[in-house]
Length: 224
Ligand code: ADP
Ligand code: ADP
Image 1 (cartoon, protein in one colour):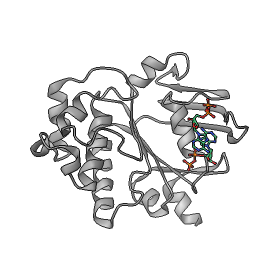
Image 2 (cartoon, protein in one colour):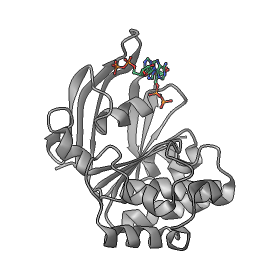
Image 3 (cartoon, helix red, strand yellow):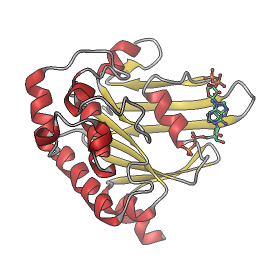
Image 4 (cartoon, helix red, strand yellow):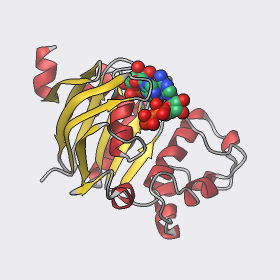
């Protein structure tokens, strides 16, 4: 059975704008899915609904068999979200930022796990540094560490490499493949076709609130 199931999902915002117009999709455990599409396509809306941050207008989404609206506590505890922007306190230390993150999941982190995550992201030596002392790349790593602090089964990365240089992009891509080796299911949004090509198993193309196509990467790249 798929770890995430999305059926006939729609979202019309309070201002009347239809951001999602009936999306259905299954995501298998352990896969890396890239949602590719231009700005405004509805990618962030889709992941915000799966993460339980935005309510759908209609349709059903389950994570690990639980409904993301009715059972949001259970589903949030299975999910880590890496947002586009760092919104945490820049004067706080790396260790505190990651440890005291409740984020969207609302559960407490285990110190031994935090140490492992910080080491795996090469952040352990910087654990006492304030975020504002870190480079842009290190700050992105902190966001990932925070999202992994409660050992999620599913990780969402919203535009992980928007506005980063080539070296950092490569770095992010290798981080994603390390996580997949640990069995984490990964969904990322991107508007870079090279990014989808480099790291995803499957690619979904989103445009104007619709999922136009979902295909194995190899097949899709043959068509483009
Ligand atoms: P919901 O329908 O989920 O209740 P709302 O329409 O009330 O969502 O908007 C939620 C938040 O998003 C509000 O704080 C609003 O200011 C903000 N928002 C409104 N329009 C946009 C937009 N075009 N893009 C991004 N955020 C927006
Ligand atoms: P993407 O992540 O693909 O860029 P989004 O899901 O952020 O797309 O946005 C899809 C569309 O929905 C955009 O046109 C955006 O302005 C609009 N939108 C996003 N949030 C809100 C909101 N809270 N209220 C009204 N419109 C919104």
